[in-house]
Image (cartoon, rainbow, N blue to C red; front, top):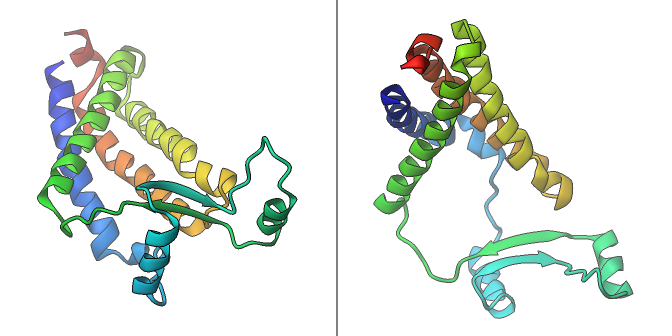
Length: 187
């Protein structure tokens, strides 16, 4: 279990470094985000029309009613899914990085624990690495692809995120597969 803890911490470090490279150094975020034409005007409209912090979907179609006008607006578009937080936040706050690191450590712990449990039947490095990568692929497919399918989100953002997630677990998975072996899992 000592190696599970080591993989957890290393996974957090690797994930933070990779995330920095993927989202700030490499150009991929340029393909997933767009600047609003007039963000002050949009913020004013959202403040008036979305008064609570939360998630808004428009046009809102309540399946329990037969609101034909909203259903027609849904057919015609535009469709939107807005996540809004009215309280501001410090850009690049240290707490965001701390919680991001802890999220990666916790996620790495779960992958390392699964690998530890399965390691006795995963003889080679390649098979263990593939096992860890497949956990990342599962997470990306299950989480990232749900939004463009069910909520009509643009595919580019979620596909770029899915690739990031798979590559993150490819890197962390290599370390996990090296440190967690059938021999170390017996201890």
